[in-house]
Amino acid sequence: MLGRTSMFGAAMAVALLAQSSTAMAQDAWVLTVTGTNGAETSFALSDLDAMEQAEFTTSTIWTDEDVAFSGVPLRAILSAAEIEGTSLSMIALNDYAVEMPLDEIGEEFPIVATRMDGETMSVRDKGPFWVVYPYDADPEFQTETIYARSIWQLNRLSAVD
Image (tube, rainbow, N blue to C red; front, side, top):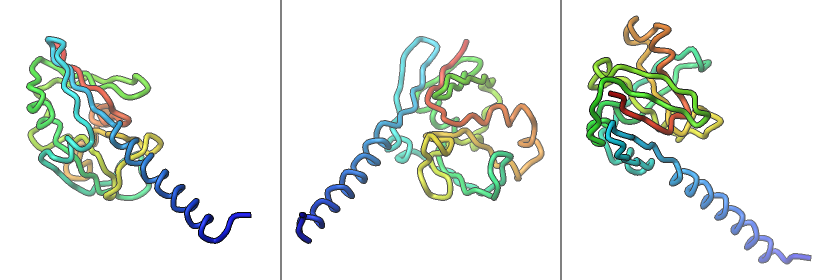
């Protein structure tokens, strides 16, 4: 039979292990960006957090309520990775891919969201990264094309000539 001290120690170990595995999972979240020359740049969550941040609250066709999204403007990530080309292929963990012309990426939108309502996103919750627009801000963000480009579980970006 475990004594009270042993039970407390075991509970603390379980709590620390759970916290540690969450931190390790977040550290494992990487967005890989590949240029037309094949050069790769990887951005861990901490790298993205250190970049220029954008935040907005909007409704989406995938959520029941308005959501506060925060993350990095896609244009800033491409600039940091020195990406050139004519279009960008965005690929999810399940290999779903969508292409977007580079000249249609604004300075501010879309963002690569790293958080919903202040919390990092699990794969189950469309994470680790989700390309989002402020859908309520302008009817131009409420089209099938924009919705198709709103890729979640994003893990790779690849420039296309």
